[in-house]
Amino acid sequence: MTAVAVIGAGPAGLMAAEVLARGGARVTVYDAMPSAGRKFLMAGRGGLNLTHSEPLPLFMARYREAALRLQAAIEAFSPEALRAWSEALGEPTFVGTSGRVFPKAFKASPLLRAWLRRLDASGVRFAFRHRWTGWDGEGRLLFRTPDGEAAVVANATVLALGGASWPRLGSDGGWVERLAARGVVISKLRPANSGFIVAWSDVFRDRFEGQPLKGVALTVGAHTVRGEAMITRGGIEGGAIYALSAELREAVLGLGQATLMIALRPDLDAAALTTRLSGTRGKQSLANFLRKAAQLSPVGIGLMQEAAIASGRPLATFLPAELAHLVNAIPVQLTGVAPIERAISTAGGIKFDELDDNFMLRKQPGVFAAGEMLDWEAPTGGYLLQASFATGAAAAKGVLRWLGSS
Image (tube, rainbow, N blue to C red; front, side):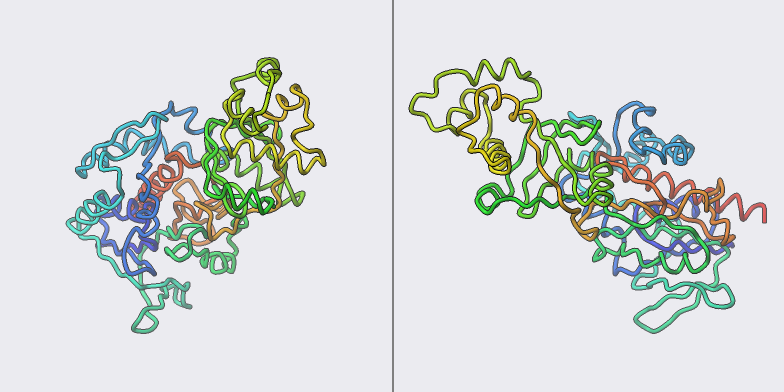
């Protein structure tokens, strides 16, 4: 029986192992960690968002310039197929109010346990605490293990080692140098779905750290996203920030900073807000007046105060029309990107031109790649896991085709 090594026990690697075993290969999954799916379990801590229910053309647009490269893989293992796969493992799914798809158990652990049982029953073997270090002169895979170095012969290999976010869970980007040494072109790994650094005043930071901004609209350049964000001690993060993270990241890395515009009441235009804010304040504090007249949250008013301080004028001196404008155009200066170790996912990776249609490395015949190792990024919302599952399945099918023809 043909021996195939899968390196990486995350969603892409486990899906590759499942498809390979179903195709008749003898599969061993190697991973540096003591158990499988560590980052997968972390992703499910707040409710495992498997995929999204929106129409496929809109779904694919979330992958930006990589959409065409991922199209065939995701069409072959679609969001509907992923839901059916989960249900076959005893974990039916449901569509949340935002269109996101979750297992009814709302957790990753039951799904992972059922998946590992299926893989075990299909003959897939696991070798944990095996850190891949490259190849030897004879083309054997080299691993560093608790018992020393091990050399493994495989007829084909699927690399599914992840990006460089959350390295303590296994994806540390250590593979980059090994593949680059073989001539594989790799786009630099960068944080994606990450937070950004803001130099808040001490008063604002101490009072509003951990406070959410709900129902806001965030804008950078020509891109606007509505949703939620969260004030952190060092800056800002959250779903709406992640959706803009590519544009924000490139601006910060290219120019040293980026201006994020925050609209607190995006459904009210300037005229309506001006009318509301033209009333008599009486003995109310300005914060209380803004809270009642424009239904602003304390953290939103705090952001307005931060902007006023930066402009050199006390907020109390703003005329009603100026206040109305500021409510929906608060400038926040982002001065840095949160470290890649804290990012949810990674941008960059193996350039798609380095792969053939089977996801095999052109410069390393018999070696295939899948998941976050590839040069794509997407916002949170189910898109990350969907592409990881789909490229894992596509790479495994590529292995089977290649083995059958070679």
